[in-house]
Amino acid sequence: MRSRLPLLAIFPVTVLTVVLGTPFVLGNHPVRWEAGSALPKLVVGGSEDSATPSDDGSDTAQASAPSGSASSATDALQVAKPWKPGMPQWGVQLYWEEEKEKEKRSDTFIEKQARKHAEYLIGLGANSVSLSFPFFIGGSTSDELSAGAQTPSPERLEKVLKVFKDAGFRTTLRPIMDEGNLEQNNGWRGNIDPASRSAWFASYKKFLTPYLKAADEAKANTFVIATELNSLEGDPEWDTLVSSAEKTFPGEISYDANWDNYVSGRINMPVNHLGVDAYFPIKVPDTAPVSDLVDGWNDWLDKKATGPLPKILISETGIGAMNGAYHAPGDFYTKRAVNPEVQANWYKAVCEVVEDRKMQGIYWWSLWFDDDPNTKPDDKVASRLDFAGRPLSEKAIKSCFTSDYAGPGTDTAS
Image 1: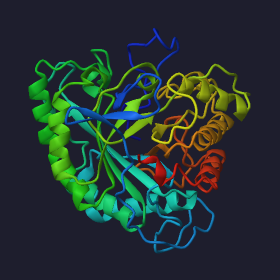
Image 2: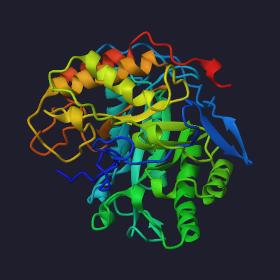
Image 3: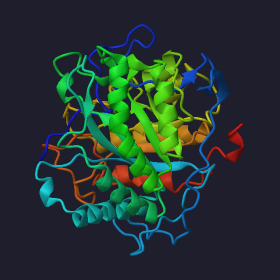
C-alpha cells in the first residue's frame, strides 16, 4: 500500500505554546479576523467588508433519497438534497495523489473510481465534496512550485469534479503543498520562507492557473487558494494572486485556516470565504462522554468568539480511531490500539457543535481516491484517521449528515 504523505492532519514541528499551551496539529492562515469577532474581514480595495457565503452552486437537481446504506445508492448517482445557499455543507475531503503506475489509471478508471466514492457519499447523506491534491516545493526557502508525478493533471481533476457535479454535489478544488521535501527543515508548509517572495508568488500563479481553469470548466463552487501557509499570511502579493484567480474562476475563492491561528491571531487574507481546519486537542480520557467533547470544542471556539458562528465552515476535521486520540486529534502517524468509539464519539460531538453554533458545515478528513470506501481499513498500514469501513464512525457521520439542521441560513450574508 502506498505511503501516505503528511497533509493537514499533521503536527507542525514548531509547537505553539504562548496562547494555547497544548500540542498542535496542522497549520494554516485564514482571512483577516478582528480579535473577539466571529466575522472574517475581507481585504477588498484597501477596505474591509464582512465575508459572505457564495451563492454559486445552487443549480444542482433534486433527486431521490438514498436507500440508507453507506454503500448503496440509486444508479442515477444523485444526492437526496442538493446543496443550496444557506444549507449546511455536509462533506468529505477526498484526497487524490496519482499512483506511480498512473499510466494504468485510464480516464475510464478514474471516472469509475469517482462514481464509487460518489455512491458511498450519497449513502452517508453527504451533499458536498472537496477534492484535495498535492503540489510540490523544492525546499523551505525555494521560490519554485510545481506539479509532481503524484499531482493529477487539471484535465483529470476536471473529469472527477464533473462526476460529482453531475451527481448533485457541491464541489471544491483544493491544492495542498506536499511536505516531503520539507522534512529536514521544520517539516511543515506553514514555516516556509522563500528567498524571493515575488518569485514564489509568480511560480504559484503559474501552477494554479490551469487548475483554476479546470475548476471553472467543471463548474466547481469553490477554489481554495491556499492552505497552511502561515509564514506567508498577510503578504501583499496575495491581493494580486487572488485578483488574478477571480478573473479565471468565477466561483468562491476561499482560504482554509488552521485552528491554532483561528483562535489566537488576527488573520489577513484577501478572500471571500474562510474555512477552518479544526483539530482541537482536548484533555479527556478515552471514556469521556460526548458532552465533554462538546464542552472542549466550545472552550476552544470561545477563545475567538462566543455564540453562533454562521460565517465559519469546518473545512477539515477528523480524529484517529485509537486510544489517546483526544489529546492530539490530527496525529497522522501514530498507530496506538484501535478504538472505534473514540472516533465515533468525536464525530458526534463535532456535529453537535456545528449545529449548536449555526456553522456552515463540516468536511471530514478523509477518503483516499484510489481506496475502496466500502472495505474495512487494514489497521496494520492504514492511518487511524481513516473512517471508511468503520461502522460506528459511518453511523455517526450519517446521523450528522441526515439531521434536521437547516444550516446558517441565507440571511447571514450581510
